Image (cartoon, rainbow, N blue to C red; front, side, top):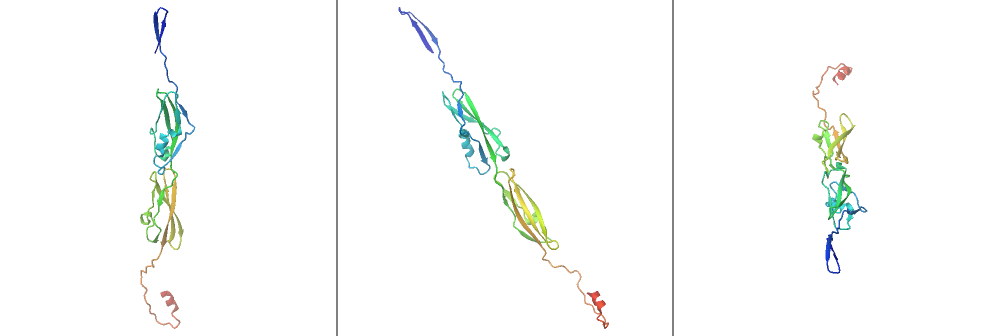
Length: 221
């Protein structure tokens, strides 16, 4: 407030006041030259990477002609640390001391490009009478940095004699982002058991016919 006084030569005076107001209705200026999105590798991105990106306002800077600027962001609203989340938009807001603000957005994505780690049962040799299912030959297991993977298998066979064969059992681990790891287990089915003779052979005695007893010999054989 300024008081203006008018005084005549005899010292008579009159005064009036008026107000000079400095206001700030201009939003801060955001420089997006270094603004960047970020990919978060599920399970192996170093700790603090996302936090540093947020604290750095995704690389954006702001200035204001009248006052300092305070940054905030809406990270965590609807955020989901899952590779199925897609791009998640974060809004960064620069606010001056008079409440004027400007906003800029950047995205972070949770990605998973690393295949599961698969542990396959050892190769095995079985008798042809034994069970060749995984309950007897072993089941593969898998781990993943992000989400527990699904383990499946498929068989291909090469037949040998009788019902002996070589089974190539291919185990596959698939995570939620469709990264896969496959490895084979070889199951060899053999037959090392001799046949079982149910009826013992019996001797035979015949009367000599002078011609070698051929018919009787062949019948006995």
